[in-house]
Length: 279
Image 1 (cartoon, rainbow, N blue to C red):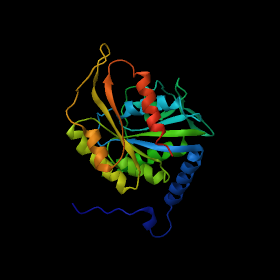
Image 2: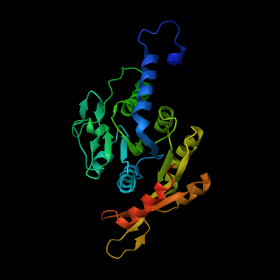
Image 3: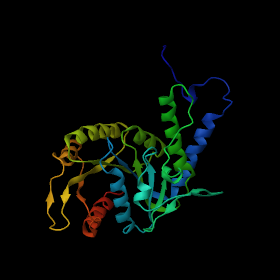
Image 4: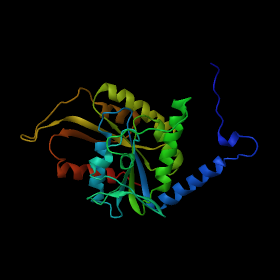
């Protein structure tokens, strides 16, 4: 099999009958227009799944909504495994009108949009890609979906939009290109060395994409006993502290696993810490 070469739409010679370049440029202009009323956009990222990234996003959103007067939004950009919407208690269908797609509103007053709101209950995301080079087309389609979420959702005025990204580095690079004034990214890890290695690669990719690393949050840093208040070890390692030192960024928080709802005092402390990082 010969090598497959791809050209960008800028490299296509002659007239582009599809006017793809104009379509993409127009969509990027709509992204900027949609986000004009949002003070800060922050990415929540990780190098691997299973670290509780969406849980941290939902928890942060709830806490910050109590402190930021202009409101908080959550964009669940994990297209294949969307969970943030359900964690925030919202569901479809999406309301559509001449303005665009309207985010769901949680009981906390959060504006939330997710692929989960567009899928039938229990159904997986399926792309209608060509039958050849599927892995290439899926990447393009995922980037296009992220662009549409930013361009077509009517966010309105917000103090902060949290973007819950899929595991890995690719979507962060896409987001940085679509949102040039991205305020930064928070990296989520669990204490283990395996997680540290994966998240480290994602953080290096963020630096290479010129995305500011705001800090590291270590999730599941222990098990908090609801009866006695003691916190015991859950995973070996100290990935949060190691990554923070390696990249010279703050260790924003170490969040233990709670069998009961997140304690209000801990939520308040976490929210205050993150709010202080906002530009």
